[in-house]
Length: 246
Figure: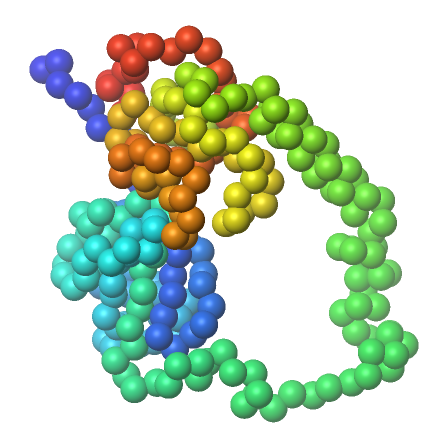
């Protein structure tokens, strides 16, 4: 052993996908080990643009332009692509914006709801007979109760965390991180209660702002939002942070 630092990178990355021919944003997870050419092939089914006509642009988690992904032979992981970054697909084939999302151009067969309700050969009829999805009242009630209990647990956990507390963040599948609580409460970008943390090391995603709204101040890549149940408050001095866990 040479006593050096071992860096462990998550083999996959979750990105936000947008394109010039669709108004929708899609979240997908991809392997960092695929080439940009392979990545474009996978994007064909998502955005509807031929791989040969794609130009890829990488944006940060706060939607700031970073660079183009223009080397087809390079690995996706060789670029600074982090979770929640945005990859924008520019279509060079000449397709118009919204062409594949404009449902007004699609010929549809429509039937009044009261007529559809009486049909015995419909998907709705099958789901009713099999008590599937929303037609299974017991299962639906159980899921709603579990969700309510989870939300109450997270709210209680958030109430026990204060701004300025030193904390330890433990997320399944990721290394333990230590930092300082900078924000506790609800946010605009996702439902539920969240804790904003400034890590001791640059292991975060942003500088305390998400989608142009600032929640707290810190250096870029030191900030992150985590669920309250992943946070443990305590006396965690900076020197206890283990770089060998990265």
